[in-house]
Length: 224
Image (cartoon, rainbow, N blue to C red; front, side, top):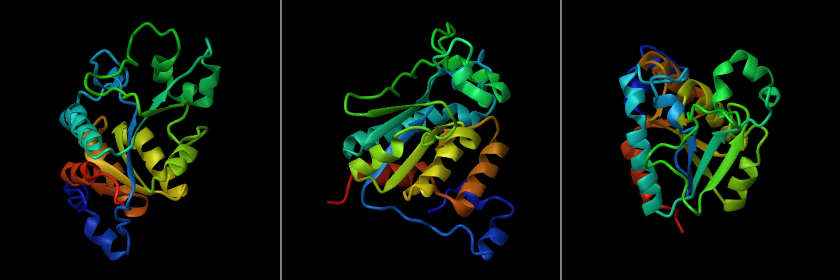
């Protein structure tokens, strides 16, 4: 079922009447993909903090429940994390000019904002993909890894919804995967940004679901 935040959007009825919001549905072999989960988004001193939005503030709790469900169902878990290694951020290219706050992921940065959150750390069998751009697919081997695993459905959560979550969910469809975004498991700077982004994603690119549905599916694991 589509997340209530999407269906409550003032344009949902007219959008639905325009033949948008077609459901992709779940495949038989999902994977959980957590995007940029680190201290930067939940620290009051960070330029990327989401703490002004109560829903964004609580998204890590949902991610922990999604992760626990995936562990229970032996569902593959992947993590995407930004990493820059050039001392002048040249490997950040034009993105570093537009969004200088991404320097928190530069090797040697002493602020510690790239640290994993408690209860949200990769396990020994998880895959960690390092990226330099918003999408976890762009310039990485993520698509190949997922295809090699036999994954057909990518469940995306993390931050921020309007940036890296959106870019990754759109590219997932481009690579031929069913794209699912979990409302409560993603966060942004305001509820308005969250709703607008999820509404747009659900219109054309992804199924936006509530936590309960995602936990149930991830906990069941793969259909064999």
